[in-house]
Image (tube, rainbow, N blue to C red; front, side, top):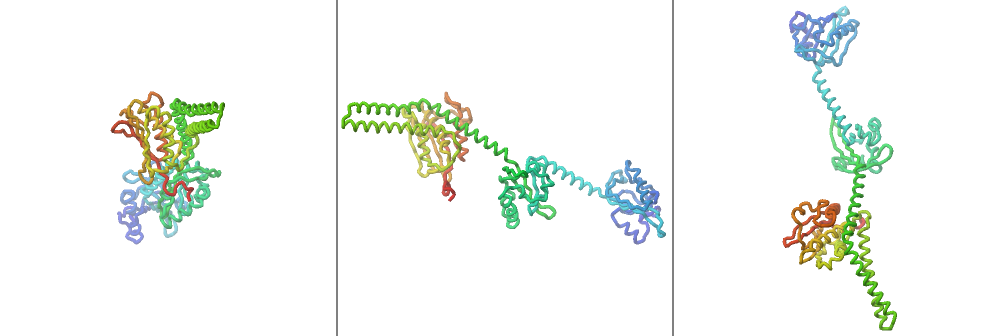
Length: 507
């Protein structure tokens, strides 16, 4: 070690050579704080050579705001104490402050007398910078996890919770201290919680993913015992040779409630659309109902007159008149039945329906009074397009709207033909089409035909086609319009078929 006035290489003894070879700074000083020894590690760390440092008071290494610190340390050395400072600021020759970890120890001579102090210092600036960056990164991560709307839960391979974000505390009702150390199944109701550990074990053993890496809707369990719907997304990470799983949880309670309210509003809108359609048909419906009622009255009046002067021959005529009256009553009753079913609000109820029957019933209602306007109806029904999964009343509402639109489009044309067809597209899809020979749709209307409140009619709100498309899309299908080259428009909609094994109660 270099001594005052001895040059940079110092005592050639073994201990001096060892002191010179270590990377840490080793500094000797008197009890008054004067530097006597300065190894190569000190030169490297502080930037001063041994010749520059020897003979100077140790305070030249201290920053301006710590000039009293050397005396405090030396006072403790004089009392025979060993002073350890894990982190302290010291100044290099270039003026830069560095972080050092150091130890000051008393030095005794052969007679046991206290003669000075030995300082060992290690530059930990880079370590402290890395530590500070790590702490800042962790702080930022905690801040993000505490402010994101999703709750974050970290578990180990055994399903034990190791981290629990502030959002998770609010969502589940546990504090982080209460949750950490518990099995994550605590946060799931039976039987989901019981299955969770099995999912993890199966994944670790086989790599088969049931939840890991896949987002899905599950149920959560709060501390108070209440359950709630949640979207769970699970990821996997490795750190320190261990495997962890992160779960991000989103509370779907408000989302599900909003969807329920939206469904109610859509049902109300669809119902009002049906009432509007019937309002527009009121005149023709009244006429159609008046026909069987008038015919019934005529038949019964005729039977009454025949009974006034009854003869055996006239009894057969009375019997026939009563049978005809009964038929007309049934005809009127059938019209009323269809109207009641069509107007009834009810809940959406999708079930297997015979497509041919569904189409023909809807057309029978839509064509009320159409015969008088000279409209010819043709059916082109594919027997392979048989059973669809649908809410019968809602799909009939769409068909009724398309049929009535087609009839109105043909009011001012000489050739009036409405063609209703079905065809199977593939194993899962069928198509229903309604084609008219009317005037067609002008381009400015065609571009926004399915938008609300767009109509070419003199009456009506222009919401029928918008609602019809909403209904069809809710059934997993599509609704669109195509111009016909010879004049007119074809509306097409697709519906989902009932495939083998569906609609049989799962057997």
